[in-house]
Picture (cartoon, rainbow, N blue to C red):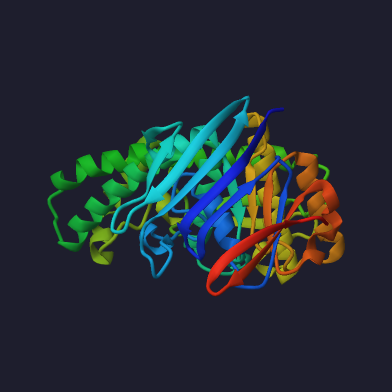
Length: 369
């Protein structure tokens, strides 16, 4: 099994960090300090070495350190399997994020070919009890980690659907305007559905038989309007048949954009939404670990894990079990918490960084456990 880890991370004018450099050796990284000191921003910096908007889904402009407003830049040295890569992610004021890989300009999708990054953040703790949109986003992030082409087909689907919705809102009734767009949606939508099904199979296979202290979730997909055709022809027919109803609603009511992710705790036979807060957290961790195991087999190395405030809602036994599983997996996990005692069970299996705030500027210091 190969390794995937950052060996160096440099931040410049990113969030609360004026400048910082972290040198890593592949072990998990335990980061602790007071709330607001800048711990999550370190994890967010790592997440910017993956496609998309990072773990807080922030616009590039919002990542600029204030009041300087000079633009931000992140650099990283990545060990990916048996190769080393130099990564850069940056944005000037008023511009979109740009990416460079080994000194050459690259699309964000290129990051997914050299690195796989998974994260769990506190906002996900309510995943099972809030709306379907957040669960779809979580599902598609999981799919994207396993099948990088999922981003391209998702963009194609969304683009065609926006155009179709514009026609619906303008009350355009001429069927000829819809045919080409619905054909594009059906082609991309069928691939999205197939990708999601394939990813869930991979997650289920990674869960089955795994030695883990966390509950195994049973995952399924549902659709707001009932059964969703899985093939291109079926979806194209459903879109055509639904035009009259969609005209009344002013939007597209059938398609993969209306899918929901359901989870059940198999051992207890309860839906995730009915589990306790601690149980819901344990289910989420179980999914992240299963995703990581699936990636290990598919990519050839475990992904980089970003676990923000991961100890919240976990008792000492489960916390120790999580650290054991992360180390057994061989993943470089960046974890945050408010106190050093939350990472005591890791000992010298991890690097320990203390983050503090001094006059509005984040600082870090490596400490010995």
